[in-house]
Image 1 (cartoon, helix red, strand yellow):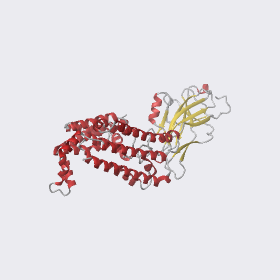
Image 2 (image 1 turned 90 degrees about the vertical axis):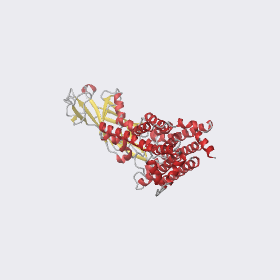
Image 3 (image 1 turned 135 degrees about the vertical axis):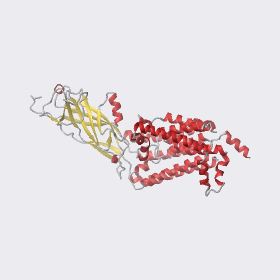
Image 4 (image 1 turned 180 degrees about the vertical axis):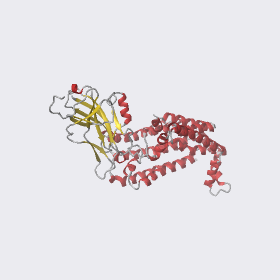
Length: 219
Length: 291
């Protein structure tokens, strides 16, 4: 790596697969270095999820057991039922696996879920923006030059190794061209009056019918 | 795993315990029934609603059915209702049931608190008090509660949703307590259908009692099949827009709401049909005797 005069920026792309409330975040990164340079380093992506999106720790644990995905969630207790306005940000450290597409390519997928948002006045869709992730590398055997890689403090272990004498580095990369937007349907506040009145009328009517039947056919 | 059991899928266990409670109550083993009941309430909270029908049933058995309600009128009771409640609460069987169930439930709660600490209390009981889940579900109130979640009417509307449920449960207990299985079936079916949150998992709670009442349903197979199909149709009509909302991202909230109201109407229709076609042999004999 010392022979290189210019550091190559990594290229990061992120995509949201599927539709609706349950999605898969696909992260693909192309590092400037080749796989040989990296040796047995671990590549991970650190992404901050806004309150509008969450990951299910039980789902992640299950995927981890089957060796599909490995991720750390901070904080590790997630309220999966909370609406967006009662939830907080989550930081996810997602370990990436080598991508056969090219030598320095890595990829990972993370199942994410949308939370319920406040009902809107007119527009039936809420937007959640996902910022570009931070790419991190953890190396234990070889230490990377600090020209292209900035040492970083990460509260996590390298895959399968203790954190000492491993060192985490953060990768400088071109910012992702656009923020990823997830669209979430929301209720419309303009329906409020109609919905309340009709619902209460319906429930009063139905309960009256059952009451009448009970009094008529009971003892 | 323990969180799942207190909040999720131990349905078969609860069904077994509820059935055991009913079996022992009908068979006059009050203490065993109470023990099963305490255990059932520990596993899932909903059997708590059976307390009133069971108490009425136990009391009615001792004093004779016709006299149960008339008891309140004798003596110098300031009000017939208070007098009746006093009779109910001082009945020997009722007291025994309450004491055994209370101690079973109390000791289980204490034991689990000792084993798991505050987390147990939080997940098993407190969670239900502070839970705010307005995501789409079968309940007719879902959209109303979602739209008003943060408004100043939220508490009043929550109460307005609770009152019909409460009134129906009390009336059904008083009217049908003599036939405990039927009363409990109606209890849970009404509780689930008029609840603020309703998911498929709750249907098991009353379906497990259906085999007990089917022998006494004087209904043609065709009518029964029609009611069953209507019930499934109601669910299907809700599940379709629900699928498009959750898995395709379409804004189908209004359709889901309307499907919820329709499902409530179908449930009401089915319950009214069941009530009007239910006849116990004993009732027919009683009616004949009274003539």
